[in-house]
Image 1 (cartoon, rainbow, N blue to C red):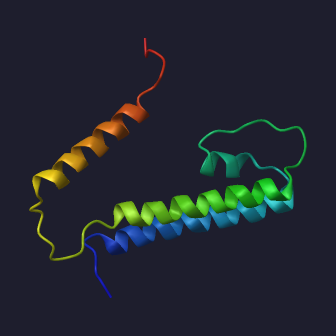
Image 2 (cartoon, rainbow, N blue to C red):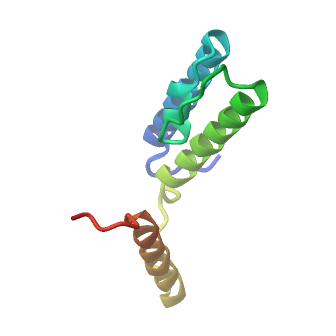
Length: 112
């Protein structure tokens, strides 16, 4: 079994997120109000007049599971003991990825 530098905290965060998604999915199925599940998975709430269909709740549950898996993959870090020395190609790839993330996360409209 491979050990990662931040494996335990990453597992704690990912498991907490997956637990929150599972609990809010059950609450959505019982109450018929999907606002909390939408805020947790989609980061916004779209008003609905009636109770959500089952396929929509299942889709949100799957999307939340994928986000939990992504949290685990991103937060765990490198394998313990691996050196941080990377070649030029790897460093350029990281810089391009970081630039892309910053570019995509900036708002499309002016802040002022």
